[in-house]
Amino acid sequence: MLSNPCLALVFLLLRKQFLEELRRIFILI
Image 1: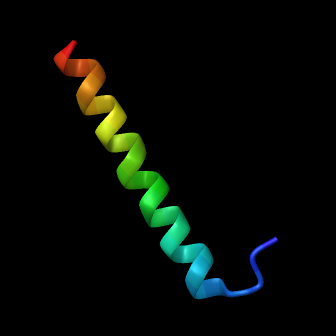
Image 2: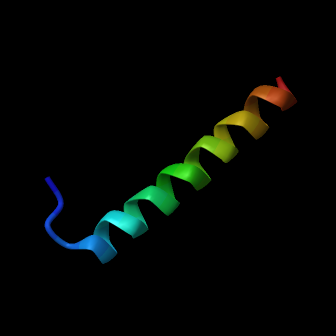
């Protein structure tokens, strides 16, 4: 899917940050 490993790594890091933000929002609710 993603031929560039650096791009894949950035995508994984962004997804991890996004999941952490979602978890924080759910804790606040």
